[in-house]
Image (tube, rainbow, N blue to C red; front, side):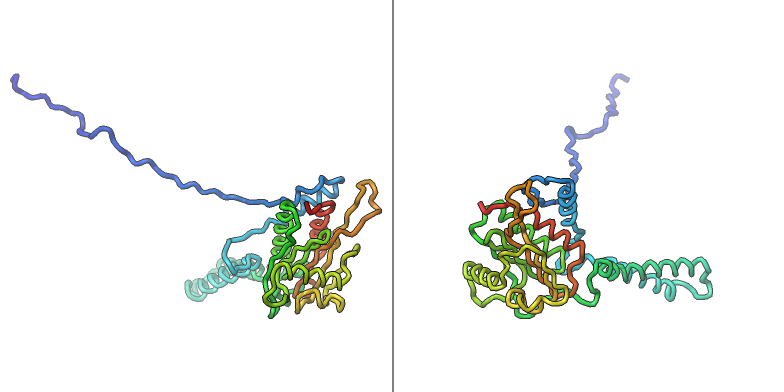
Length: 296
C-alpha cells in the first residue's frame, strides 16, 4: 500500500508560453488642408473673414484617387449599375406570373432613383451655369508647363504653386497665368515655342502681357463665348472663355478708394460659359489674398 506512487493532476504545459501578440494595423485617414494662402494679412472685416472661410472650404473635393476617373460622374455610374441590376432581376430572376404589385412598385421606385442618379451630374453643371454639351478638352499643339519667376520669395512661391493647382483642378480652366508685381507664374496647357528654356519662356510671357496691355488692369474682364481679338495671341489656341481678375493693392488700409494695379489672375478654358458666378466670386477671393504680398 505504501508503494503506491503519487499521481500529479497538473497539466504538463511548458512554461513560459510564448503566445503570439495580436497585431493591429493602424489605418490613418489623413485630410491635408493646405491653406497657406491664410498667411496673408489678417482680414479687416467680417466679409473678408467669410470669403476666407469659403475659400478654404472650396478646395475640398471628394476623390477616390483613381487616375483618369472623374469623380463628378460617380452618381451616373452608380445609377447605371443599380438600374441594370433591377432590370436583370425583373426579367431573369423572377417569374412574370408571380410578380406582385408590391414588387412592381419597388422596382419602379428603384428605377426612378437610378434615373435621377444618372442625370444628377448634368443637372449640377446646368445649375452652375456651364453648358452640358461642352467638355473640358485639351487643344492640339499645346504643351503642359509650370514655370515661375526665380525672384519670387519662398513663401509666395509656395502660395502660387498651390493656388495655380487649385484653380486648374476646381474650375473648367485648362491654362492659368498669375502676374504679381511683374513676376509670373504660368501653369496648364499653353502654345509655347519649341525647345524653350525657362528664362526664355518667362520673357515670352512678359512680352505677351505687355502687348495685351494688362499691366494696368483694374477691372475684371470676362469673355464667356470668345477670348477677344486683343487676347488671341496671349491665350492658348482654342480658348472659348477667358476670365482676367485684377489684383489690386491698397497702400493705405484706411483709404479704400485708392487702389493700384498689382497684377492679375488669368484663366482660359475651351468651354463656353466655363465660369459661373460662384467661380468668379471664388477667384476674386483668391486674388484678394495677394494684396500687399511682396516678392521677398
